[in-house]
Figure 1 (cartoon, helix red, strand yellow):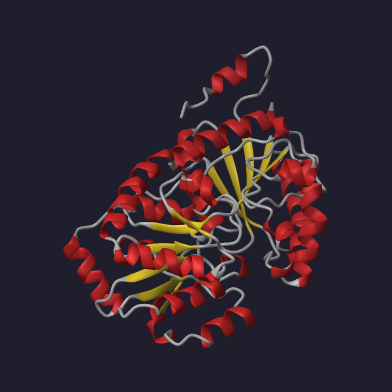
Figure 2 (spheres, rainbow, N blue to C red; figure 1 turned 45 degrees about the vertical axis):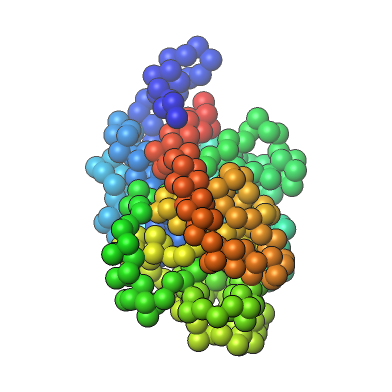
Length: 388
C-alpha cells in the first residue's frame, strides 16, 4: 500500500498542518500478556506508526501501570490516568473527567482512540477506531449497564469524530460515507506453516497426539461457542475418530447457553480448554490444527482467520457479517445458526485431504492481502486527515 508522504499534507495548498505533531492515544487495552483483538490492533499499528514517524510526539494514555515493552520509542510518553476504566461508571469518569484534564495539559493536535471510545468533554480533534457495532445488532449479549453505555454514547462518539476507520456506521448512525476510512487488520508475521515433525510434537504435547479443530478468541456469546460445541458433538456422533476440539481464549461471559451446550455434549471429554495462550504457543498450535473453526454470528474483522491462513491451516467460518469478505473465497463458509451446517463442514474437512490442501493453499495466498504495515500506513493517513 502506498505510504502517505507527510510533506504532501504539510505543504499542499489544500491542507495545512503544523509540524511537529503531538498525538494523544487511548492505550488502555495495551495490557501485557492479555492482548486480544483490539489490543493486538493497537499494539501492532502504534508500534509501526511511532517508529515510522520519530519526528512527532505521541502520548500513550493508560488506565493502569504499563509495561515498558509498549513504549515503542523515545518519542512515546506514557501517562497513567486513573481510575481503571473497566465498568460503565468508570468509563464515564475516565473519558469524561480524566481524559479532558490530561488533554488540556498535553494540548495535542489529535486524540486517537483505538477502541472507539471518545470524550465528549473536549474540543480536541478526535479519531475513534470503531471496529464493529455488534452491540447494535446483538444487544442482548451484553451486560445491561455495558449495553446502555454503548447505546447512549457510541452514536455521539460517531457524530463527534473527525473521521472513522470502519463500518456499518453509515447505515446505523447516518454518518456521511466520505468521513469513513476502511482500515483492515493485519496478522502477526510470526504465524507461518511448520513441518510435519513439529506438528506431531505439538499434537502430542497438547492434544494427546490427536488432530484437532481449533477456536481462538474470547468466549463471548456472539462467537457462537454454544453452536460450535453442539456441532462438534454432532460431528463426533456421526463418525468414529479421535479428533478433538481445542478452545483457546478466556471465558469472559460463560453464559447459561454456552454452559448448557457444553454440559449436554456426549463427547465433551474431547474438548480441550487452553485459556489465554501466548503467541509463542499459538505459532505452534495454529499450524498444527486440522482447521480453524471460527463461526461467529458477528465480527468486525476476525484476525484469527488471517492468522490461520498465514499458517496454511484450513479455515471454517461463517457466511455472515464481515467474514465472507475477509475469507475472500479461501475458507469454507457455514451458516452460523445451523448446527448441521457447521458439523457438515467439519466432516468435509476431516475426511478430505484434497479439501485440506485446497483451503491451505488458497488461505496462504489470501493472507498476503493483509499486513500490519499496510494497516499502519492507512491509519496514519486517516490521522493526518483528521488533523487537517
